[in-house]
Image (tube, rainbow, N blue to C red):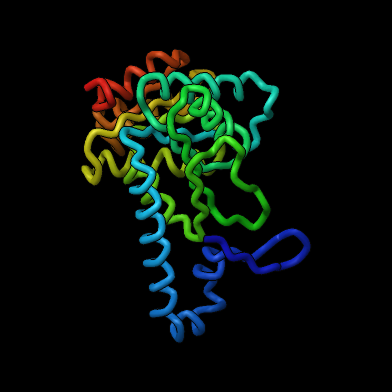
Length: 238
């Protein structure tokens, strides 16, 4: 699916960057219909591939691409993927290295389907070797739809902006009723605890969210608790 244009050195202009660059607004006006067809084609190809994969209940696992393979965090990702797999869930990640690779690896160890939804970036990242079903998207918004359409829950290990993006988008969709039951578990109280405290002590305290909104998140160090949270909300054993 990917198509990259060289910008300078190792950096490339991505399809998203080209789409959102106001400097190309006139070109966009002239070719709008054609670009919309490209969005449509990416949706169709993604839906077809995911339906053919027949994943059943699947959990999206997010986390940093920068997690070293020899770290405890990587081992935790493998264990999470394996435990979710043993509970009957397929695993969907962004397909990259680090925590994503770890969760896909755990899925392989558990003998369940392992999916990688890659994204075109200005730097090379590639799909990790533990992915059975591989898709590589040009547009972030198409990829986001695939994650939410084919996942019935979301587990996040420590991550960066991309993990935060997926987290708060999922929270917003649950809060506004755009998706139904969609459990969210954040793994690592040391990493996520400060965020949970800020949500309570700032957002909730100032009336920006309601008390029930805070309850949309589970923050835990216990992988079995996170897996049970996914199962109770409508997983394979429900």
